[in-house]
Structure formats: structure tokens, C-alpha cells
Amino acid sequence: MRKRNARIRFLLRPEEAADALGISRSRLYAMIAKGTIPSVKLGKSRRIPTAALRRWVEAQVTAAARKE
Image (tube, rainbow, N blue to C red; front, side):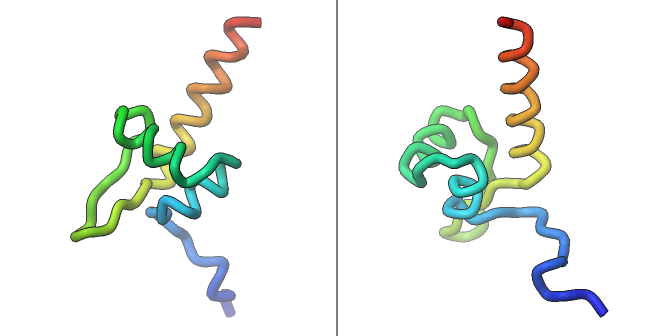
């Protein structure tokens, strides 16, 4: 039996994405507005694809490693 929290999430609410990144919700919305973090609009709601968020984090890690 699978627990409810064990389900695969394809989209995160901005609050969840901000929490995962350790930044404020306001900062996340600013990054979305700049196009830094990809997002999708579902009706009046904004969601961040988990795959896109992971790719963004990996790109940041790779860029930081190149600078070292």
C-alpha cells in the first residue's frame, strides 16, 4: 500500500518550490517573472514543474562548479 505522501508530484505550488529552494515566495515569483524559473499557469494558479526545477538547480550547480 502506498502512502498518500509517496505519490509522484509533477507540479509544485510556488510556496512548495520556494521552500524546496530555501528562498522566499516573493523571490521565487520575481525569478518566475524574469523567466529564470519556468512555470505554467493553470487557471488563476501558477505551478512549477518539478522536472524544470531540478534542471534549473542542476544548471546552477554546474555553473558554480565551472567557476571554481
